[in-house]
Image 1 (cartoon, protein in one colour):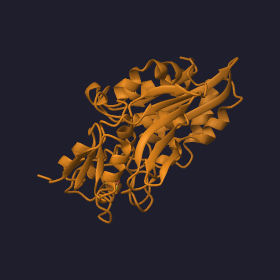
Image 2 (cartoon, rainbow, N blue to C red; image 1 turned 90 degrees about the horizontal axis):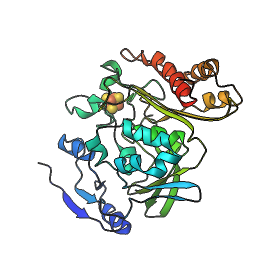
Image 3 (cartoon, rainbow, N blue to C red; image 1 turned 180 degrees about the vertical axis):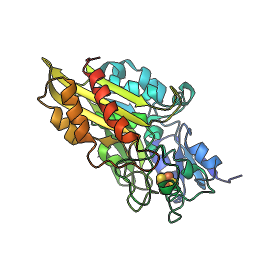
Image 4 (cartoon, rainbow, N blue to C red; image 1 turned 180 degrees about the horizontal axis):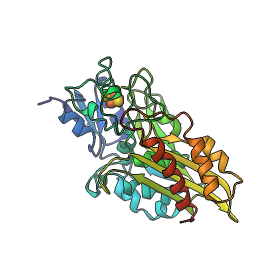
Length: 327
Ligand code: SF4
């Protein structure tokens, strides 16, 4: 039994004050990942600060920006008419994640903060630099079928598990956070980290910072977007590869493009060069194949996940075809 103190916060300042009392404090909202981590002894906070009652669950559209409070439930966001109308890509990604029961508990803030599902990370009898820095990476020479093909290091080859984060990256979202020095906005592409020498740190949040919400600009991708998730079974499974694809098309010519991948790196993986290659090109299989080729530059597989080197480009082409309504 792990002993911990429990504090329920009713306003953001109270939560920030409570979390600052000791370094091992952690926020909890839906608890769909944290409780698992605590049950397995992977994290052992001495204080849990319950933020689930904070007034941070609003979804609104202000000045052409969709604003989603960090405590909005995944299911509520996915079913919201504004989200479905303005950003169907986000709704699709949310509905591709987890099970209906988990979506009814999990919050937006918790979704983007969820930790890797690498099985070595969850098995405390095995080495894992992310769980226990300096012990080694069991997956590097072990069973690495689910692991990264981009942006990994010799310390960690894990992937980020969130579907919603892949869509938020493609949609140029921003994360609004508050800490002891006030509020700041983090572009979504800078929110998560690559593992480098410190795989134990997943994000660029500062200690004690609280996520207030995410903001998604209205960037005109509602008409032509698609979230494709390839996984071992049809539900309740993490992505082998996922693609968030969004296009602006005029008279069958691509005016703008956004592509991000999930299941391939320690963070959602944006494909900026492939996006640029599509601008001004006709909507065609050849355009999409060329973008997929560019997307895979620098990719490297490990013993059990080399199949991702083919699966990823094929998935990119398919997602773009569906987004552009070629199929
Ligand atoms: Fe741990 Fe990362 Fe290696 Fe998995 S890939 S065992 S999370 S260090």
